[in-house]
Image 1: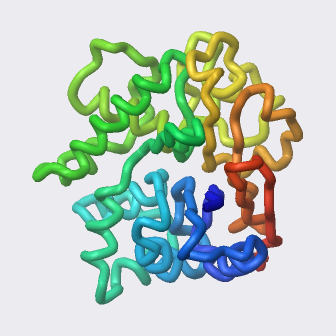
Image 2: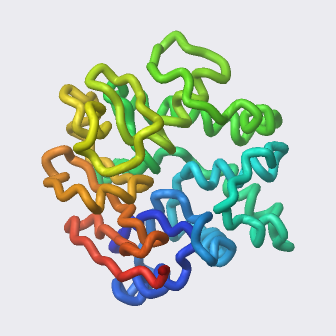
Length: 273
């Protein structure tokens, strides 16, 4: 029963079909993991959302920043809509409520004890162990699934606080956890987040989160997406025990899958300009 972890779709439904054909995906036998960001920027976000939802227990999906953005816009925060968003088709769909409710129940982190792999959308700060990561993710999941979830979206946006403290509470704590799991790319050697930098590493002093010396999750095998610019950063990621899977399909790159059993990669070219 092979399991394929797939990088950010961002509305690239045709490329997903190409990739599943390439790996000879059989829903009766195989399993799929998705690193989040199923939607936005690309042309077929609604088709991606419906397809992954309909996979049921055949798929595991973690929330990305674009899913949270979609949920926020649809739950009282339309002022955060961006000019480049391609979410209108979802927001106007007849099954909008069903799709959004399904998204709201998804996890922010997934760990498989059998394979030893953990999947998040973006990354982990160096201060967190794996068990702590799963526990902190569950705090946000509880807020999303509870009766006051709209309050969470009203307080989700922002880059502060940029430093973790176990004593943090309230919305600041949930915002920091959310930013780590769905938005982190860079941080300092002592774990201060740099939420402004988005390009490939090498041009500034902040470190990719997975390169920080002494990172407490260094012995854990972590799959993540979110960072398309890493396709321009050739690196032996195995020495960091990470598998970045966002190769910028929506920007003309590739859609990538990792077969967990033998850590073999598969890819198809983007159809986007």
